[in-house]
Length: 129
Image: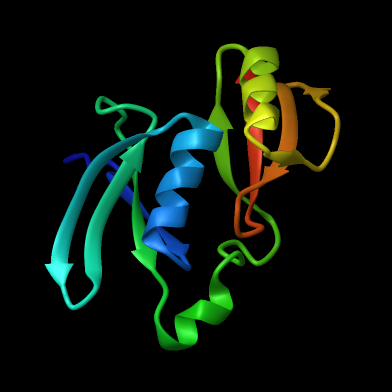
Protein backbone atom coordinates (compact mmCIF):
# COMPACT_ATOMS: atom_id res chain seq x y z
CA UNK A 1 0.00 0.00 0.00
CA UNK A 2 1.17 3.53 -0.74
CA UNK A 3 2.46 5.47 2.24
CA UNK A 4 1.54 9.04 3.17
CA UNK A 5 3.63 10.84 5.82
CA UNK A 6 2.57 13.83 7.88
CA UNK A 7 4.62 16.72 6.47
CA UNK A 8 3.27 19.84 8.19
CA UNK A 9 1.09 20.82 11.12
CA UNK A 10 -0.61 24.22 11.12
CA UNK A 11 0.17 26.21 14.27
CA UNK A 12 -2.28 29.05 14.86
CA UNK A 13 -0.49 32.22 16.04
CA UNK A 14 -1.45 35.80 16.86
CA UNK A 15 1.65 37.12 15.15
CA UNK A 16 4.22 35.57 12.84
CA UNK A 17 7.27 37.21 14.37
CA UNK A 18 6.41 36.46 18.02
CA UNK A 19 5.78 32.80 17.13
CA UNK A 20 9.04 32.59 15.17
CA UNK A 21 10.94 34.08 18.12
CA UNK A 22 9.34 31.68 20.61
CA UNK A 23 10.05 28.54 18.58
CA UNK A 24 13.62 29.71 17.92
CA UNK A 25 14.43 30.84 21.46
CA UNK A 26 12.37 28.47 23.61
CA UNK A 27 12.61 25.27 21.58
CA UNK A 28 15.76 25.91 19.57
CA UNK A 29 13.93 25.33 16.27
CA UNK A 30 15.07 26.66 12.94
CA UNK A 31 13.23 28.98 10.61
CA UNK A 32 13.15 27.02 7.36
CA UNK A 33 11.12 29.42 5.24
CA UNK A 34 9.49 32.82 5.57
CA UNK A 35 7.94 33.84 2.27
CA UNK A 36 5.74 36.90 1.80
CA UNK A 37 2.50 35.90 0.10
CA UNK A 38 1.09 39.41 -0.15
CA UNK A 39 -1.77 40.96 1.75
CA UNK A 40 0.03 40.51 5.06
CA UNK A 41 0.17 36.72 4.72
CA UNK A 42 3.37 34.72 4.97
CA UNK A 43 4.36 31.08 4.44
CA UNK A 44 6.40 30.35 7.58
CA UNK A 45 7.86 26.90 8.20
CA UNK A 46 9.73 25.91 11.37
CA UNK A 47 11.15 22.64 12.64
CA UNK A 48 13.88 21.33 14.93
CA UNK A 49 16.10 21.19 11.81
CA UNK A 50 15.82 21.00 8.04
CA UNK A 51 15.87 17.18 8.08
CA UNK A 52 12.87 16.92 10.40
CA UNK A 53 10.10 14.92 8.68
CA UNK A 54 7.37 17.05 10.28
CA UNK A 55 7.35 20.85 10.27
CA UNK A 56 5.11 23.51 11.76
CA UNK A 57 3.44 25.94 9.40
CA UNK A 58 2.92 29.13 11.40
CA UNK A 59 -0.52 30.46 10.46
CA UNK A 60 -1.55 33.91 11.65
CA UNK A 61 -5.10 33.83 13.00
CA UNK A 62 -7.65 36.07 11.33
CA UNK A 63 -11.21 36.99 12.27
CA UNK A 64 -13.01 34.28 14.26
CA UNK A 65 -9.82 32.18 14.32
CA UNK A 66 -8.29 34.49 16.94
CA UNK A 67 -10.58 33.02 19.61
CA UNK A 68 -8.90 29.64 19.06
CA UNK A 69 -5.28 30.69 19.49
CA UNK A 70 -3.92 28.67 22.40
CA UNK A 71 -6.73 26.13 22.25
CA UNK A 72 -5.43 23.78 19.55
CA UNK A 73 -6.30 20.65 21.49
CA UNK A 74 -9.13 21.99 23.64
CA UNK A 75 -6.94 22.22 26.75
CA UNK A 76 -5.39 18.76 26.41
CA UNK A 77 -1.76 18.12 25.56
CA UNK A 78 -1.69 18.43 21.80
CA UNK A 79 2.01 18.31 20.96
CA UNK A 80 4.69 15.82 21.95
CA UNK A 81 8.31 16.93 21.76
CA UNK A 82 10.95 14.19 22.05
CA UNK A 83 14.47 14.77 23.33
CA UNK A 84 17.47 12.52 23.94
CA UNK A 85 18.49 14.55 27.04
CA UNK A 86 15.52 15.61 29.14
CA UNK A 87 17.50 17.47 31.82
CA UNK A 88 19.53 19.57 29.38
CA UNK A 89 16.55 20.35 27.13
CA UNK A 90 14.27 21.28 30.04
CA UNK A 91 16.99 23.50 31.56
CA UNK A 92 17.55 25.32 28.26
CA UNK A 93 13.82 25.79 27.80
CA UNK A 94 13.34 27.06 31.37
CA UNK A 95 16.21 29.52 30.88
CA UNK A 96 14.33 30.81 27.80
CA UNK A 97 11.24 31.41 29.94
CA UNK A 98 9.22 28.26 29.25
CA UNK A 99 6.90 27.44 32.14
CA UNK A 100 6.54 23.78 33.08
CA UNK A 101 3.28 22.80 34.78
CA UNK A 102 4.87 20.00 36.77
CA UNK A 103 8.11 18.41 37.83
CA UNK A 104 9.44 15.69 35.52
CA UNK A 105 7.86 12.31 36.13
CA UNK A 106 8.78 8.78 35.12
CA UNK A 107 6.26 6.91 32.98
CA UNK A 108 6.53 3.52 31.25
CA UNK A 109 7.29 5.34 27.97
CA UNK A 110 9.93 7.69 29.44
CA UNK A 111 10.57 10.87 31.41
CA UNK A 112 7.91 13.52 30.78
CA UNK A 113 6.72 16.96 31.90
CA UNK A 114 3.97 19.21 30.59
CA UNK A 115 4.76 22.77 29.49
CA UNK A 116 2.83 25.53 27.75
CA UNK A 117 3.80 27.46 24.68
CA UNK A 118 3.55 31.23 24.30
CA UNK A 119 -0.21 31.00 23.69
CA UNK A 120 -1.04 28.44 26.38
CA UNK A 121 -1.17 25.27 24.27
CA UNK A 122 -0.04 22.28 26.32
CA UNK A 123 2.91 20.14 25.22
CA UNK A 124 4.71 17.08 26.61
CA UNK A 125 8.49 17.14 26.70
CA UNK A 126 9.48 13.47 26.59
CA UNK A 127 12.74 11.57 26.79
CA UNK A 128 11.63 8.15 25.50
CA UNK A 129 12.94 5.03 27.19
